[in-house]
Image 1: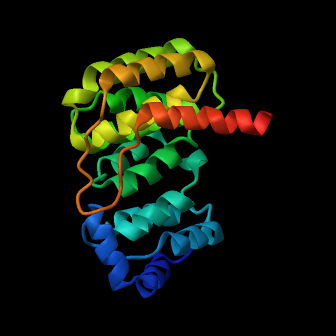
Image 2: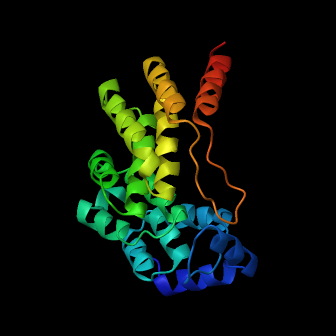
Length: 227
């Protein structure tokens, strides 16, 4: 295992005040160093896999360290209980995206997607719907019937869902719409019935995509590649 203290010291040296301001606008709270994702990705490639280091970095409570933890963690050494413990610490959407990408590499993707989307907490439910998007993008054995049910849940629940959950539900709908021709039709119809999805992105320039237009672009790019 790499020395956690040395890794944390390197992270601290790479952090900048400007990045801390940017991350704060995106809902990240202290403690954090403000390390760019370019540096975090580079460190992740250099250090992984190192699951003991990942555990130490996560336990530090530092945001940047936790992003790096998810980059170096070994999916083969991660149990469901550990994933749930880490997920209980989620408190911003930056970390949610990294957590979802990691869980998608474990055998627990499907179970977490089902359980987390039913959670009453904003962050865990948002992570769950991000996992549904991962399911839709993956080459797994899930049939269209599963995703049709997820579309029904999105359509019935998005209007009253918490702020970030709405954004992630919309993302899942888009991903489902790109999975197959039949799901494209179902997702597009659902998106039209839902209408505009309003999400407060705070003091950022981020926007929630318009689902129908985004799905159309996915298929247009696909058609262009196959032409």
